[in-house]
Structure formats: structure tokens, C-alpha cells
Amino acid sequence: MTSPLELEHLRRKVESGAVLADAELVALRDAARMGSGPTPRLVVAHALVNAGAEREALPLLEALRRDFPRDIPVRLGLARALLGLERHGDAEVELRDAMALGPDDPEVLKVLAVLALRRGEAERARAYVADALARDPFDAETRLLKEELEAVDLPPPPTPQEQVLRPEFTAALAAALGRAGVAFRRQGKDLLLKLATGGVGRVDLGSLYGAYREAPGTRGLTAYVDALAARLGGLSSELGEADARLEARLRPVLRPADFPAGAVGALHRPGPAGLDVFYVLEDADFVRYLPTSALEGAGLTADAVDAAAWRNLEARPAPVHPVVIDQGEVRQAEAFTGLWAVAEGDGHDGARLLTRAQWRRVVSQAGEGPLQVSLGRRELVLVCRESDEASREALLRLGHAPDGIPGLFRLSADGLSRA
Image 1 (cartoon, rainbow, N blue to C red):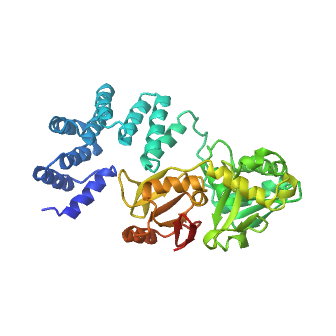
Image 2 (cartoon, helix red, strand yellow):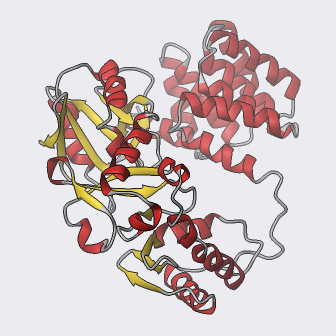
Image 3 (cartoon, rainbow, N blue to C red):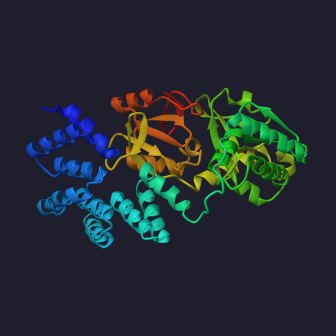
């Protein structure tokens, strides 16, 4: 007899889309005969669909629909099999029924997006994907669908994009900056640029390389870095503008105490809990720290920068989602777990946690007691109640990313401190 642990392993294989061996499928069938509820039989049906045996799975799924007419996963499984058989109209009927049963279920929206994509209805698919991401921004499948849709209207590259490693990219960019007459210097992970105002601008090399890797492969490396060098050379004028547009783009970020040593020239001040507050210009492509030398040309003081940055962040609180930590990955949960994520994903969530608007949102989910906070990921902040020892241990086990801040912090109405 197959043990519960082995059955769970098989279920996860099926869930990942793997094709089972004959003996594994037999074990699932035996478990389904002895099990109750729809799940054991539904796993068998999905295993058959994974193996391309939709016609064999269809009678099993139709029987499940008769036995469990209000079960949404059963409807989705039947829709999946019908899609595999190119019976799009029948699949849509099942999906509409599933939508009526669970209007807020992102899984239904995902399958509707797949159906729309197969029919060539890209705009309709985009709407479903946007709705699904709004309900579950952590779902990896939905994000993959979004990326697929973003590529629908793009022509394929004429030749496969050459694999370029980060050192090669950095060397090519340095050469392009030299050709463009842009004075620069490497400083750790950052690139310092000499501005026309006499100051120094700072951009993050990792962000530049990441943008290159994600760009469509329609240009070679030389053409790409030449265009990038021209853009970087044009940053000078923006930092010298004395108008409200610059102030509107300022945001605060929290960095560890040793960060100033690698960010010479960037404006910063001491922050809470032994951290420092730096200031960046909101930019879709670059992480750009505001240099102290830019203040005079922009007609700003350090206090004015600080006030504008926090005012801008106060106006944009992030959503707060219940989450679970699964095998080192943070995933959104559908119900209370004891862990929550502040997850706008723009790199400002650590600082955002210190605003009044964000504090109110967190308290509405987690309660007013002191909280434990992990700043170990720049793309989100994790919180739990201080009294929840199990969740606190989960945060400690999760650790921190290389660009995150280690350790846990304590957050209360009085502010942020070391735990």
C-alpha cells in the first residue's frame, strides 16, 4: 500500500504537470478507489491529462461533476480536459459555471485567460490576467501568462539572442560610456556618473543588467549599450531642474548601517533601528540615488528632500496580503496564516511601513499589538504578531536575500526598533 507521504509526493508531481510512470498512476487509482471526496479522483484525472489522455480523463471528470456539481476544482479540471480536446465552447461553459460558483477565484480567471489566448483574443486574456494578479499578485502561473501576453504582439528576434554574462555587459557599457564622453567610475554594485552640474549621479549596475536581459533581442549588445549610454548621459539635466517634477519623483528607502560606505556621495540621514534613510528618484529602469551635490542645482535642501520623499510615499500605501512560506518561497494565502506581506514590489516597502497610511492598513489585518518585521527582501516586507512564536520562527528561518537587511525588527505605534 502506498504511504500518505508517497501519495502527497505523487500529488505534487501531478500538480507540477509531470507525467507519471504506469506504477505511479496505478497507485493513484488505488488511492482514489479507497478515498472520499472529489480530490483523489481529480488527481487521477489531471495525471491522465498530463499524459495527453484527455479522452480517458473526460468520463471521470464528467462523473465528478455529477457527484460534486458545486466543486470549482472539478469544473476547472473538466475545462482543462475539454481545452486539450480543442472543445473550446464546451470548456467556456464549464468556466462560466465555475465563475458563477466562485466570482473571486483567480484560478478560474487564469483558465479563462488561457482560453482567450488560444482563441487569439489577446485583449480579453490581458483583462483576465490583470484581474487574477489583482487578486493574487504572487501567483507564478499568472505572472508567466502575463509575460506570454506581453510577447504576443512582438515579432520574434531574427536570430537567437546571444548569451551575455554580467561582466561582459559591464565592460561593454563602460566602453559605450567612454565613446559617449560620459565620465564615470565603478563603486561596488553602483555606477557613478559625472553630471553636467558638477555633481555625481548613481545608478545600480544590477538593475541595468537586469533590464538588458529582459529586453527584446532585436539589437546586439553594442547597439544596446550605446543607446543606454546616451540615456545615462542625459540624466544630468534632470537633477539640475528646480521644479516640482523632481520633488514628485523622490522616494525614501531603508538601507543597513554599512551601506553608506558603498554609496559615497548619496544623500542620506540616520533612520530608525540603526538603519539609514536614502533617497531615490522613482524610475522604471534605474535605481538612482540622489547625490548630495544635486541639491544646490535643484534648489532643494536636505530637509525638503526628506519631507517630499515621505510625503510621496505616504500617498501610496501598498496592499497587505496574508501569505505562507512554502519551501523558502513566499506565496499568497487565501485565509489567515499569521503572516502578512506589504507588497507593492517597487523597492520602497520597508520605508513605506513607517508611514501612517501603511501602518493603518497593517493594523487592520494584523491587529494593533507590536509586530515582528522582516526586511530581508527588497520586493516586499513580511510581518507577524510579536506574540506569534511560530510565525516569528518562520521569518527567522526564511533569512534574507543578498540585497536584503538581516535580522528581525519590532514595529509598534512608536516606530521601528531592533527586535
